[in-house]
Image (cartoon, rainbow, N blue to C red; front, side, top):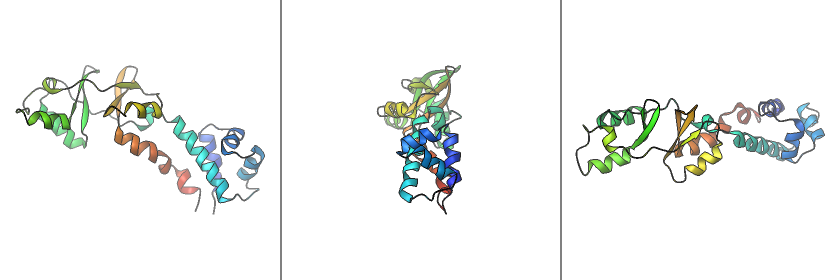
Length: 193
């Protein structure tokens, strides 16, 4: 059984008019109105067009804040490396920003620490002695598409609100969260039963 109500509800959540959804679905507005009022029984191919159009619209509107990981796990530059390793393990992360007084002063990664530890003992060193340059930062309202482009060359991006770091986006976030946001919505689960 097809849940037509989900189409209308999702269209409204995305602030689309019937006319706008009809255009991006290559359907007529009158047909979409009939469909939403349950006056026609659509083909599966027609439903797939509508689902594809809604998904495209939703992904276009995704912002950095929608897929970032927060709260942001960070470390102070004056803590020792051992503390950073504990944070990596406890939070199941592999990189984090080094932050002092809401200012990003560097970054630290597991990979970097492993390489450095092969050359010298580092556990008691201060994070500031082993940190690398800060990860790039972006405003929370930047599109996921732009964030994805930055992650081609970076391991992570810090998300800021009012110039304060509030979250991080990693390659894993882009791969998992931006593709699964749609799958987690009630719409996708309920449209066909």
